[in-house]
Length: 592
Image (cartoon, rainbow, N blue to C red):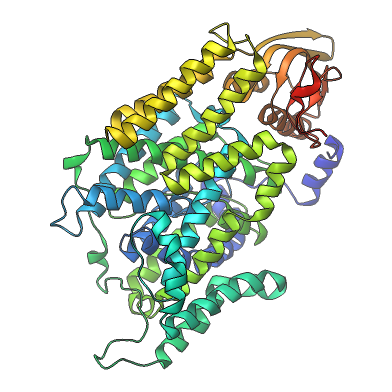
């Protein structure tokens, strides 16, 4: 951890903190216009690829990036994040379009329009959550479950898009799609496969040439190579291109579509509204938190504002034919690297997107689909990279179990069930480790009720086919888990020292209150977190305290020390693994 003095020196070296809004535009236009243009070049093909993979018109991805940049950027609570369509939402959008489309199979656009209504409703809920200051809700999700959710999405993207790379269609359940991969290789369309392979190779190798990548981003390089190559392949006997191409309207007015709210109260709609709110909000707020650390000036984001601004942007986007968006971490990281200083880089990335779609749509219609799919296969692999599993395993076998459980649920059932199952596993293990320290007064009784809710989810999902009751069981089970473990803390100030003493299980389900307490601590003090009376301190709590200690030193020049863990046993060799204060060392199953 760098010292406060070093942090201040760094800020001094890079100049004063940039101004915001109109003064910021005047001060930093030469930086933010260039950064916005670079991000536009990166986001254009990726936005097309995400929309097509999501089962919606290609132009929907571009509308999303436009609204995300021009509206979400100016209203947002962060300074250098980039909003737009994201690979992490492909699975949800695709599922919503397919399931809602089945409600009106005679209309091929019905699923898309019903999904737009779901997206608008999601935005309204996000606005409400932001206004009631629900930004800290992300704290109730353990890191391993979040990583499992993202990895599961990555696996689904790879499994579905590899068929598009090969120029073959694959339908059915996820297991059927995965099982059909060998057949698609046998029956591949050679021209499409060549373009897809080129895109994948560029995506993989381009980062190894950072100087070149800074001038020509990988997605732009793919377009520069595959567009003329696809054109050189010529036409088939029917006068159609040998490879599938993007199709966007040549008339900008035809790019818009509008939601159909007639099925908004259907259980399927409610399921996807809830899924969008949870996943979209979680990914956006986590991205904002991650990019805050990469911001050269370490400016503090307003998470509640970030929440409601995403709601406004999502409602507008889905209201005109776009899809739900998030603050996307890779584009946001790139934004920082290319020298963006304020929210105006986000705005200009959306503005350039608008200008291109309105002025040069014919060029978009020359982009080969298999090249876009090749980009997504590599993106999907990065989301589910083996190194991520290895990192989680290093934090403990328990955390790896939560992650793998989430992945299995996401891939084999759906995203909402996957996240629930990961949290169900983590809450259950915490109940075992905490013993009688829950509202039921007994680990056995708590687990019996906990298992009962899991059985209810399974029954209503697979037997009764009642989505509303299945979702209700999930929600009640998770809320019960959150409310059952009460982390008790006491704050005492003595001179320059502030001591926070914890008792009971210090687990992630209590982090909303704990984080609120930490935000209220006076700055510039010697803060001591004492866990000597806490029977359990889980990995997520330790990660959050570690993040807070860096933040506290950076912003207030204070210090944070953790004490009282001498009598606790770690569950893994990782510095921030879960710690259990027990006499029976057999709890530490991962230590040997």
